[in-house]
Image (cartoon, rainbow, N blue to C red; front, top):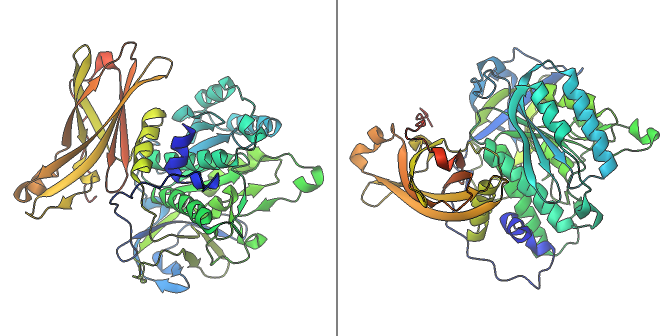
Length: 504
């Protein structure tokens, strides 16, 4: 599995350049170029007392990209945000990540107690649906899916028994960096279909900080590409990061709280440069995604409360960059406001994402098949029939969520990759298969057929002791994925057919 994780994010070259085999030829890939890209921003606005400011209009905001003013093409006030189907309200969702991969055991024990303390303070019915995810030396695991039930989350956290971070003790810098970035990519991919902002509260030290000055150019490029890909996936999914370092310091250092997401701290010397140009560490992902990073704090429960409150209300706006070039360099974003107001959004973006290799795509799909996160990037449903040794199934995908290419004869075609995995009752993978499939729509019927889901018939083997089937559908052009899990003994005969998304 370690090899697969390194392949996925492309950081295998960190370990050794001499032992590497030639990289597979890149797959044809749709890249988001600045010439047509719509840049979407979630913006938190506070006064000098760090209180959210409501009632603002589009005229109150000026967006600067690389110092040049941009025309705002859409604007949405907090009260106009669409209702989130998970929360049943406009509240964003919260994902707590327990980082037992990169954090000493005693520091993580303290952080866990602080998270329990935070949850106990909350009402029985949480305002924001919250999920618990664990990343440690061997696994990326969902401890509890999204829920507003405080007691259910508390119970899941209490049941979890932390283990010693043996990879941290052994160094394992490459593997820890890879696992951490893969975890962030998986969170982004899984939450892609959830509307609105998602706040990730990452409790832990984070992967080892790397200084890129003097690093061999090939290795530096590999790391930069991995970071670029991770940041872009987080931004596309509208995920804002709140890394909280629970490291227990001396009392003198504890009092010297640093909030690296606050412009007043002077934590970043030049906000217009690529934040990952010379250093790579998890704390930089906070401001890079419109969140905040916290260090040297012993009041973790209060910091969690502050982070969630910080991301609960925001304005959303978009612009098409005036810079139409295809230069891949980082582009900085700043919001100008009248005196007394502070606007915070992502630091910027990379206009072009490095293409994925065939190996990366394959492992991307395998990761989605093996973990228990529900992927929402493509709305899918399933029908089928158990035939003993196998099952005949049909997957239905919202046509509006897929990417369609125009063929020379005017017809439209979409291509997906489908992963099919079977698991035993204890979670062991029994079998796995992948199929590439296409669906073609005649030009004359395109508009009418877009209002119906696209069907993909598949045949899946049913090994002995199979207890769960998971299907993953991946759009070949965008990489967006959807998953559906089914009991092989009770495959639905009637699908909950995805509803077309008007205006997608």
